[in-house]
Length: 179
Image (cartoon, rainbow, N blue to C red; front, side):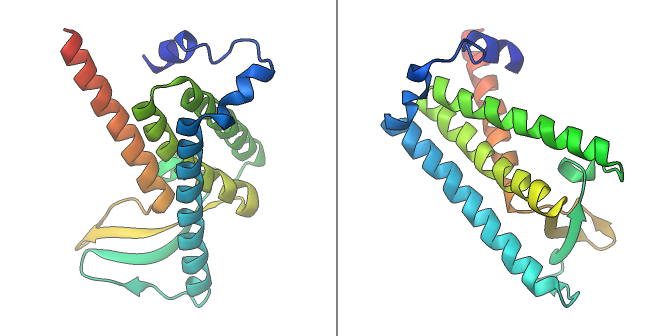
C-alpha cells in the first residue's frame, strides 16, 4: 500500500530545479521546521541523559519508569543488532535512503500527511544522527512493571511511533470511508 502510494506520488520522477521550489512554500517550511524542532528536542534529551549516565547511574522516576542508558546498534527495539560493520553500515545506508523518500513524501502530500511525515522525519533524523555520530542509538526510557520490561526507547522513537500510528489510523479511516 505504501509503496504504491510512493510511486503514484511520483517520488522517483526525474528531478529538475523546480522540484526544489518546495522550500518557498509555507506548508513545507512549517513541516521542515517541525521536523527540525523534533530533531533538536531528541538531541537535547539524549545529550542530557548521556552526560548524566557517564556516572553509570539509573534515574528512578517511579515504579513503572526509569531512565537507564542502553546503546542500540540495531533498528527499532534492538532488532537486527549485529557486531558486523557491513550489516550496520548497510542498515544505516538503507535508513538514509528512507529519510530521503520521506522528505519527498512531505513535498508531495497534503498538509495533514505532511505533518505526520514530518513527525516521523524529525524522530528518524535524530536516530540517524546518532547512528552516524556514535555508531549506536542511545535509548534510555525504561518502562516496566515488576520484572517485565518493555524495550528501552528514546524520544525519537516516540515521535516515529506516533507518526506511523496516526498514518495507519488515517489510512484505516479513509479506507472505511471509501468502502
